[in-house]
Amino acid sequence: MKKCLTTSLTALALATAAQAQDVKVDALLIGWFVQNTDNSARNNVAPAAPLNYYGLGGTGTPNPYQNGGFSIRRSEIYLATKVNDMVSANVMFDPNQAAPNLYDAFITIKPVPEFEIKVGQFKPLQTFEATSIAAADLIFVDRAQLSRRIGDGRDRGITAAYTFGDKAFGVKASVGAFNGGDRANESNGTKDWVARVDFNIDTTHKFGVYTLQGSTDFAYNDKTALAAKTFSGRGVTAGEVAEVIDNKDKTTNLGAYYYFNSGPWHADVEVAKGLLGRRFASVGTAGAAARQHLDQEYLGYFLSGSYTTGHHIFAARWDFMNYNQGDKWYTAYNPYTQSAVGVARADGADLTPKFHEFTLGYTYAFKPESVRAANVKVNYINRSHNYLLPNAGETGEKGTDSVVVAFQVWF
Image (cartoon, rainbow, N blue to C red):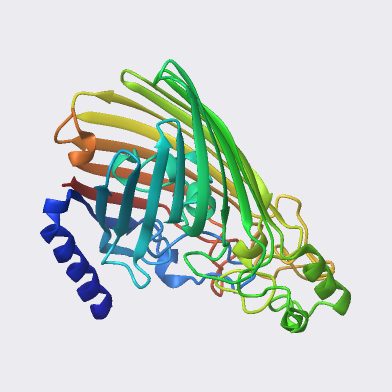
């Protein structure tokens, strides 16, 4: 961590010294306090993989696995330079995060104003909130679970986009290809192919669709080593391992969004579905969670709205994610609710990976004309309690709500 911080600060110092070369430097600092409302956050534990799905805890969201405390959520540093009207470049890193703390690093080439090519490391066009709403402009303390899990990651690749029309009515069509390696280089021949179409009617209405079609985890390409891998903890048959190879660990997204902004009112809705694929690995060593089935699908959506008056913003959001929409698994019994065929879990817990959050938010903006410049957010997060196990003497799944207070400055 110390080495990462030193490297990041050195890069910042060099960038600052290069102001004469028209390098623009911005920063976003967010510190927050989280207090959970239930002692289950410190008394209960999360189920082992592959039943632990949720994007909770750590730096991605207010942490319901711990009782609460103070932390630095973001200390992001942005560097941007424009060589001329045709070529520009951007870099973003966060010295507060563990390595690799380089998030964005890309070059943009615009041979004509309507057409651009972007190459490097950036978000691959999935979900509107994650790719088009900057962290400094979020209404809530953090993104919706769909955006965090499907759209917020970076990858290395290239996109090409063409814009039609004007501000009154415009269309932007984008296509691209990415490694599928989560900020990693790889030599595998297969790639994640992405496409997106965005529409705008003035600045009031924005809507669009996007997709991703990918296969083969970057760590397990088409070589014979893949045949020796098994589903994490599943002990599947040879035929099922062959099915993994035939499908090349397929990963997909298909989503749509609508964004409304008029005067003091704002609203947006987004929905996406697809195959979990490598996001919850089924071959080799899985991470904190693994999926139950090769064809396991997710379905996620959220709806939010806000009203602004002077220094004050009042907001609400409903956030839903089902990580096994088709209710598929390989075992002979339902692993979310049973411990054996026809035998319900002794603790009575239902760990079916349907998750929801309802968030009430309030923001005080110190400069109403520039909310991102400095603000304080207070969010109450009511969430489903199906991500912690009951202790001895307890029954039913456990979990906790959270109160989050976040302080933000952009400079």
